[in-house]
Amino acid sequence: MSEQQSTAKQSSPTGSGGLIDKGLAKGKIGTLAGATLGISSVAPGYTLTASVGLIVAAVGFKMPAIFIAGFIPMLFTAYAYRELNNAAPDCGASFTWSTKAFGPYVGFMCGWGMVMATIIVLANLAAIAVEFFYLFLARVFSTPGIADLADNKLVNILTTLAFIALATAISYRGITTSERIQFVLVGFQMTVLAIFVVLTFIHVADGSAPADVSFSLGWFNPFSGLAMGAFVIGLTGSIFAFWGWDTCLTLGEEAKDPKRTPGRAGLLAIVTILLTYLLVSVAMMMYAGVGDTGLGLGNPETADNVFGALAGPVMGEWIGLLLFLAVLASSAASLQTTFLPAARTMLAMGAYRAFPVKFAEVHPRFLVPSFATVVAGVVTATFYTVTTILSERTLLDTIAALGIMICWYYGITAFACVWYFRRDLFASSRNAFFKLLLPLVGGLILAVVFVISVGESMNPDNGSGASIGGIGLVFYLGFGVLLLGAVALVVMRARQPDFFQGRTLTRDTPTITDESDMVAGATGPEHIDSGE
Image (cartoon, rainbow, N blue to C red; front, side, top):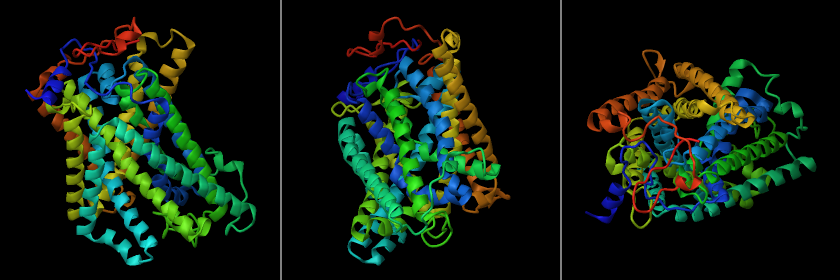
């Protein structure tokens, strides 16, 4: 038996329902590192340049209010993640906690939704990284034709596969390698965004801004000046803009303080992202306005790359290149860190027998989910290649369907917090606030957005325009992925019934009597109490 196979066997569950040590590296991630990885997964540089135009088209000057509205359910859900991780730190995160709360069937579907959403966005991030890679080269060499290489299918696919392979290799080398690279990429990205904001405000102050719009507190009020349809469209985009902060929660078993560090890192990440979005959006609106011509943020010709239009006027041609490089760094950094939660969720699902046990393998030297990381890379590469060859519209519609899956597994996790701690919700005012009120409200908001997103997905105009029987392709893709998960559930239940019969991860919530029990011993898969 190989050392790697031994690790997989050693980290497998023994049937008591307790959480297990899966063999990942211990004590590697601190609060700042965890927050950095969370920010990297959200990719604020890429998210802003790609989403600002779309949000402005829906809500105009109310963009800051929409970001705040999207932040609220994310913040409330972050508290649910924090409380669950505090009780049961596990790399399976949403999968593990929803299983403990609601049982194996809900847990499997929650984990499946998370993994598939991540795989889909990995393909999109790789494509975006390639697009900005060639845009950056075109600007550096003053050769616009280089940017057109991204539109050549063969060149696009080969370059995208190279980016995916590189991100997979970095993730395979261990969490420490990922952490060091992300400090550089995220630090550069946030620094350039800060420079952009400062220079934008300087232009506004000296009267050289083309729009020269005065600041208004009304921009931050979501309760006036917005039609319900516009608010819902903007809110859906805003929720997607915050997605990814929970990466640090899947690193709980690798944290310096497994119970506290991931929750603190998640809250720090999501607050930092909100402040970044608000500063950049306000600066953009005061500089360029929300008009639909010229540099206006509502101009449909620049909606998919707002920074591309503003980089030169705000920062100058050569300094503006840094903004292109920052967006490239943002998408590339997010591509790499997004592998982390997908691989670790699959590792946990393999360890608890929800997935084939092969997924439980951990590399003996790098202490990372070896097989799961490779599978994530291969599936992402295959998905991108197939969808690009068949139809680029399919890829676009699949990305649009992400909102359904995001609300699906975030919402389940929020409700899982309420149900998991149901025995002591009113034991203290703290419990009532952080374990009941905030998670419940966050879950309800996500549930409403989920239902609305499903309804909107049926309209072909809310995607690429493709439809089947008059119903938008986004609807079929969103529910198709979840339906595929239901099929996978049936197959896995027949092949590995232990998980689905509650033998490997039970719904019980025993009381933790000794915090030292939260870390499993090095000699094997000792159990970790999972309640509070």
